[in-house]
Length: 292
Ligand code: G3H
Ligand code: ZN
Image (cartoon, rainbow, N blue to C red; front, top):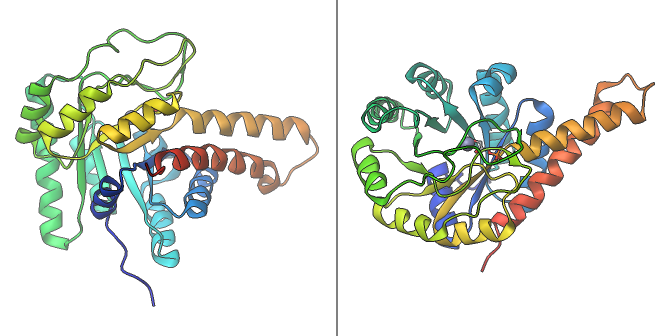
């Protein structure tokens, strides 16, 4: 008999209790999906699949829901789907309607008040759907500068040093009523050739305390192991990784094509790319799930 599947909210609570974090990995296609699933299943840990608006358009919104639900229902495996960095109420609403487990409304570039207004609109909609359907939907918002673009950058972009203040974090979470909060605590999106800043773990701990809700760390690619473990100990419950997966996929695919110029079968060409993604995800999940 199947055991009852935990919701994402319950998995996050469990992660907090154990002092570990749930990995969130962005994908663009089925190869990415299999790579992430294979790794999470090998380690038997919950996992979140993330889709930015561009990734979602490429893979298909309802198609992604079908993939995640299939693994969750058929294999009784705790895999969840997140609408990552969505920019409008309409795109958040579309994902909630399609069956996503969580959404991120990303309007950190707006003023504090405008960011609250649109976030609140998303929260209200999610609550209404929960009331109607019973499905628990988590809403995340971000405050402060966490950069843009899961790509390779030469240097740390300007603005990266501006961290979320305790006062803003507390007010924002109280006023917007979000379930998850992504503050600016040192990291930014992408891989940076000159190296990434350290995470301010002290600030993470204080923000966790004043907000009272689980925190999410964005811009995981290229961070040092010690930054991850310190951040988790300080109160980070979900960690986002994207650029590292993109890079692993690109490199493996290019090599596969170069090494086998006569090969025409897509699944043979693409297999190393799935394996490369699986390896990145496996290593990150292992680190995020270390028990201290
Ligand atoms: O939402 C996605 C991430 O925050 C990914 O950041 O590209 O630095 O891994 P990353
Ligand atoms: Zn992010």
